[in-house]
Image (cartoon, rainbow, N blue to C red; front, top):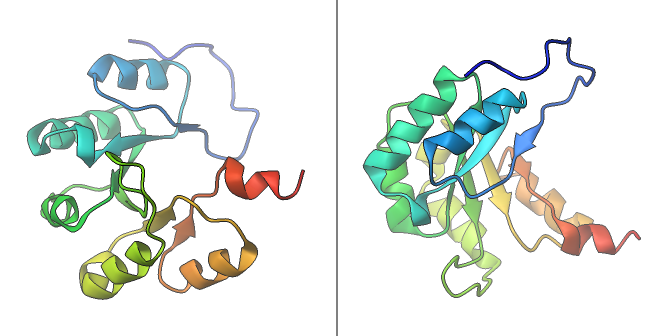
Length: 152
């Protein structure tokens, strides 16, 4: 599939495809519209599909972020020898329960492995102090509407 619109990029910031990718056609779609990155949830993809989607994304010049919300998924993801970033979510993606300490517990336990990759803390960041705390352990923080509503 060819990329849509034959023009130079008008933005100098990356564009992130934040959908739950479960089919390669979504990656084709993201490529068509010039997305720079996309989200792959380990919780909904088996390890073979995850590897396949990472490789396919990279072949389309789209950088994958693999999101995990538990240690067993993280352990599987850390075994993948491909280029991708990791997002650690403090929200259990099945129950939607949030445990803010999960970010720190996972980081402390897997510090050596996580320090070799670009990693992000995800979910329920609600003030600048938390962003400051997370940035000492993670390379970035994904903030969402809960945080942004405080400034509206």
